[in-house]
Length: 287
Ligand code: SF4
Image (cartoon, rainbow, N blue to C red; front, side):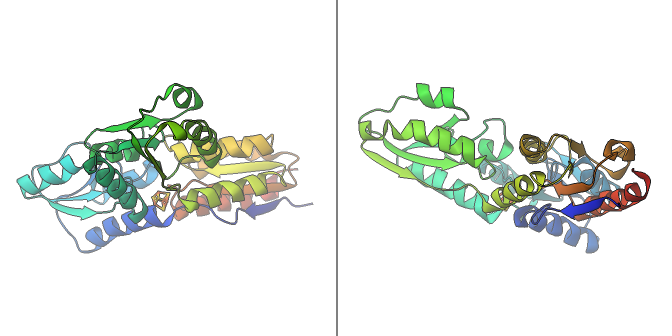
């Protein structure tokens, strides 16, 4: 019997990433010169390379001239200040949902409130949010940090989360923090985890439970793809994380009757399509 290939109900680019990519594509189509992205536009080496060949380079530092596209993770206020000083045009690809977190952070800091960001301190989105709070934010990424967090009686606490933070970990951390709520003067929680990642994670988990093997497409440097693969591994014993179609070895799928396919939020559709085509090819080869 032929192997059945089933795609996850939700996968690939979220709307924030799609929007940022489209902004770059529009600049390329308009033959704009000296276009850069502020860091890799997405955590996907193939898409970054594709843009590089079309003349759009990823830069960690501001260039001296031209146009810079901000990726969906956003950037801190210093970036905008420096760009304005140098006369650099900024095309802002910050996801509107991330902008909302930045605004909450800036307002909390301006009001003298104590800002807590539940997230990964090394993630660029979290780093930019902390910058919007003037550096006055505490980042809590795990239960141990939540345990050791100590509020003061006159604290007005404002809590936000990294938009792509795992819901289960968020609940764990917020549960610990809430036990200290009564010690504070004020307490506001903003639910800022994005439903795009949740939908992708839930769809991947649902599918992984029903298949013999899962193929997860996306950059090895993409935290959300690595995380998606980890979620699949909890539900399915055979999970293969591939970046491109030729990473996939049909021999891995020996004995597989139902194969699931999903992709991280930073994986372009053209890479997913190539892997799907390779799976169709494997379908004829595997026994
Ligand atoms: S995951 Fe959500 S918040 Fe983050 S870029 Fe995508 S749509 Fe925006």
